Image (cartoon, rainbow, N blue to C red; front, side):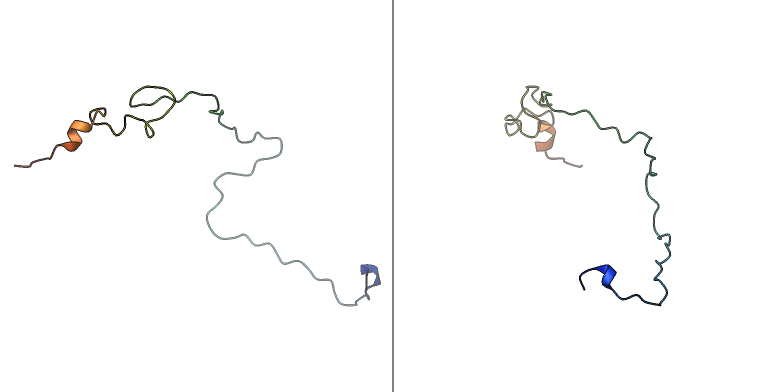
Length: 88
C-alpha cells in the first residue's frame, strides 16, 4: 500500500501521548527568555590587537613564547628559585 489513504480504518481507540513529567535534578542556571528580550551580549573581538610580553615588554609574543624565557637572570624570581632553603 503506497498511500496512507489506502490503509484500512480501525475501530480501536486512538493512541494518546504519554503525560509530560517534570524531570528530577538541578534546575537550569538561567531562565528561558522571551523572543522580545535581549540575548547574550558577546565580548568584543581581540582581532587586530597587538600582544606584548609581560616579561620583556616587547610586542609580538607573550610570556609563554618569550625568547628570553630560557636565559638565566631575566626572570625576577630566578634568584630565589635556584637557592636551597636551609632550616636551622
